[in-house]
Image (tube, rainbow, N blue to C red; front, side, top):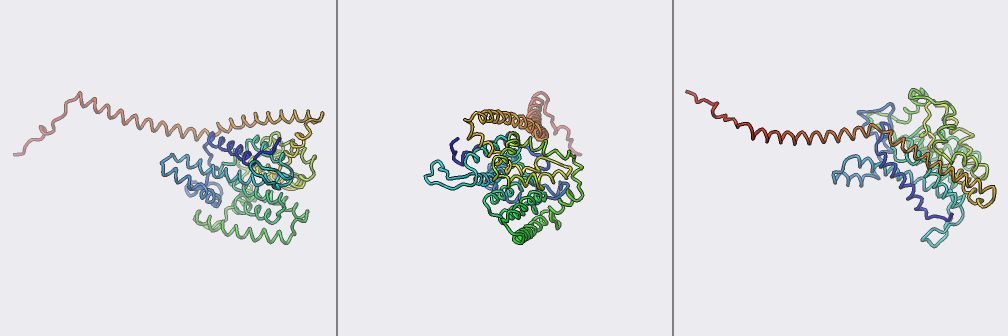
Length: 415
């Protein structure tokens, strides 16, 4: 497997994201940018900071769409494409940290140093991500989880790079602004940084407190204006979901749900390969073990409402471990025992493609309300046009048959 120009993986992932977006263009009530918040406030308030940032990026395209009088649905698609672009950009930054050695890029004559684990790991990371339906499908869904996911990817990039303070800053922002449950990722990563002496406790506290206060101030300022009352949205969300545990009224799952259902469905072949990767390469253990052995995924199970999107932020790091295992199998594929493992792995890739297709078809039919409203609008346009045309034709036909009344005869002169 020769190294592929980095833009090739981005083009592949971007094409899949665009395909999912245009094939499933509609969104559910919670998948919005919140601008109808005063009429439909929802259960808990959400911040507008993410919506503002995404709208700034998409504003030139949206302005052209409005100028050309294109249907408004395309403005929504443009904004969601901007969100998907941000997600893929942060995934790219993280992916480049998962490579090793010096690689000659196509059309570039110099060697560059690109990370930790090698270009084959980078290649399999792209393949794993492409095979997994949920991560790319959700990347254009305007959910607070996805806005937080972008910053979590940046945190991973700095973590792999060895920049501990930047890692803590990138985890603090989504925790206090977008999703307070990012704290469950923050915890194990912070403990790992302290145990490995990558950062001192005093430095970590100082960095996190300053970043948190700054972000809280911006969030309170912006969101108080938008919601027309003084509030810090994520504080209300934390109180509602974690303290009162009111989210459990939306439905509950067994405690093992994430390990026996969510992770296998989201990672597919990457799930068993992730476990193998931890065994084969001890370098990845310090990054993967915090998610399983400390707090992240196990603590998520305490909240009775368990959804796959809640642990979406864990998948990129787990995919690196899976990619290491796949790379090791590929490198040893000519050896007798490894050749059979290689065949099994290829078969698992094919099965994963089939599972993603089935999941896509289910999601394609999961937004029936959007298709119903589209059909209703189309029927309304047909009826309006037909009724106008029929009325005009009936008037013309009747005017030809019936005599024109003479209103002058009905007026008698006075006196």
